[in-house]
Picture 1 (cartoon, rainbow, N blue to C red):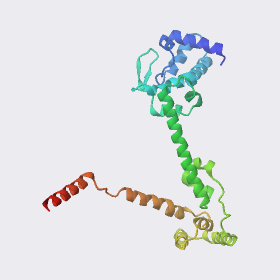
Picture 2 (cartoon, helix red, strand yellow; picture 1 turned 135 degrees about the horizontal axis):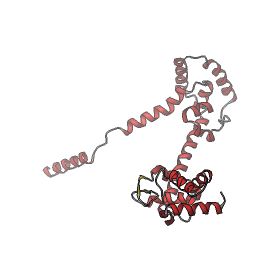
Picture 3 (cartoon, rainbow, N blue to C red; picture 1 turned 30 degrees about the vertical axis):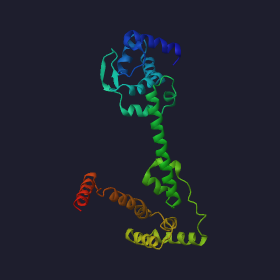
Picture 4 (spheres, rainbow, N blue to C red; picture 1 turned 180 degrees about the vertical axis):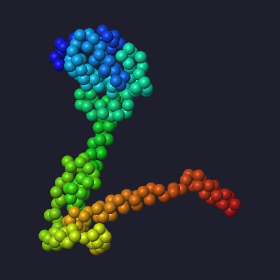
Length: 259
């Protein structure tokens, strides 16, 4: 939309709702329809009114006003007449805006909003790095691309790489490939017994996966899901409370006094 046309529509919007002349503020959910209606009543056609409202809400200025609502303890939104709306700026609204470059680079963003944006970006980067490490490790353990995607989803796709087989002897690789033809005909119980036997013999996981064809569920569950369960059991062990320790210390003191 041309700037001159936009300014004409903005002027008529301010005439209909003088409260908006005070600057960009978070507006109530659903007020876009009222804005379009007011602009059409002012003589603008439906298409121009709709285009203007879309530009208004997607403008950097309005988005900055939204993320700056983090400074408001109540995260208020306002109706077009200036009254407080029942709707508020949600955590989801703030999170989405934290990654919009024009918003977090704006000079109008508040210090608190900028700090929030940097924090969320840092958390997302760390999460991606963790995912990348996990996917790369699965690849080097010989898990197939299809299996990794079935377990983790499409978000794993950018981090999938080919397994580096250079550390294995060619004869071992050929043996594993030959075994994979047999493994594809194994029943579920047979493939589990086969993989468990190879694990117990100390065969590298990558070779076991290569020998297992497309049946990699059990080996994955053995390595990762079992490890997670073990970690959970350790975390759930009851810890000695300070109160218990305190009672024991008091008993020790009394014993020493008696002696």
